[in-house]
Amino acid sequence: MDATQLLSDIRVLTPNGKLVSGANAYLYVARRVWWLTPFWALFSLPGLNWLLHRGYRWFARNRYCISGACRLSPER
Image (tube, rainbow, N blue to C red; front, top):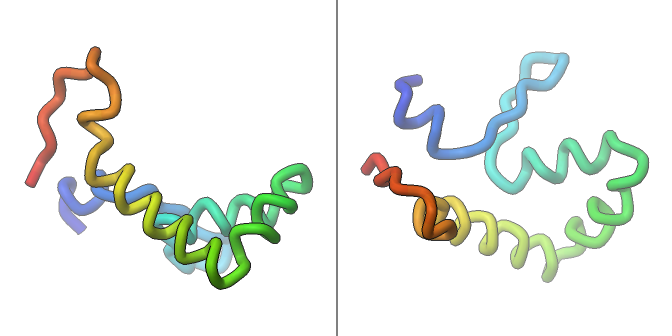
């Protein structure tokens, strides 16, 4: 995997070697941290799961535009 792909999404490497990325990485971590379990339960519901994935994609595409202080340009 090249550097551009590595920086395009958040990734979690599980203990059994599985690679989880994007919004699923947040859900994976939320399932394993006791105080984030309500977040996992809520966003595992079908309609809200779609919303989480859609929101993550939007944020990932626009992460360089969110902060006016950040002068980095996106790698495309």
